[in-house]
Every structure is written in C-alpha cells, then in structure tokens.
Amino acid sequence: MGTYRLLMATQQYRIVAAEDSDIHEEPHIEGSRITVRDIHVRVEKRGLTPERVAERYNLDIADVYEALAYYHNNPAEMRRVKERHERAAAEAKERSSLTPPTN
Image (cartoon, rainbow, N blue to C red; front, side):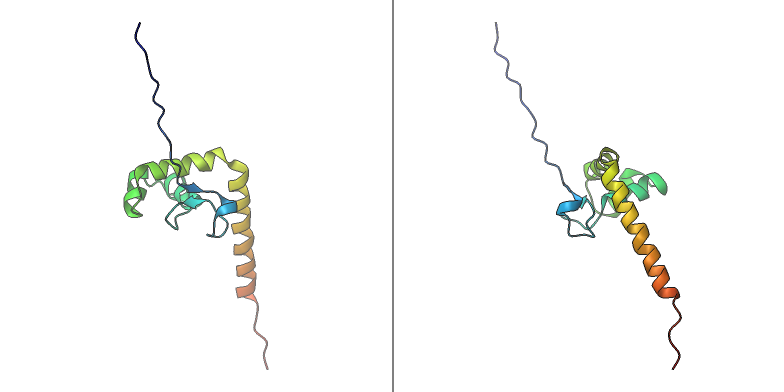
C-alpha cells in the first residue's frame, strides 16, 4: 500500500483588520490605501467588475475577491465602519453649513 502525503497550501491573507489599520480604522488591503469598503462599493454598488477594480488600482484579482469575502464575513465590523463614515459626513456637512459670524 502506498504512502500518501497531504500538502496543505499556506494562505497568506492581505486584509488588515480595522483595529490594526491606520487608514481611518478601516480594514484595507495590506500595502495599499484601498479599503474593503471601497472595493465593496465599486463592485457591488457601482457595478464595476472585480477585474476592472483590480486593474484600476493595480491589485491582484485575488485581493479584490478577498476584500469582498472579508466584507461579507464581517458584517458587524463593516456596519460600524459605515456608521462611522455616516457620522463623519453628517458632522462635516453641519460644520460647512454654519454661517460665519459677522463682525
């Protein structure tokens, strides 16, 4: 009887989690400033193909799919990121709509 050896591929993930990210505390692709949320918006909201996003941002296609998988595998984290962005946008809008004092 022959001996079989199972070779396990080592998976190197390139997503930096929000708590380790220095880019607005958002998960992003390691070595880039492209966030998981950016990838999600471009592919699933704007309808760009993953190939087009990879080409446009000089990413490996696997990075785009990994970012999409991360987005869907971490809904609570991504919801917090979205809420943080919405609050920041509302605060910025409020600051920009204030009338400057007249002297």
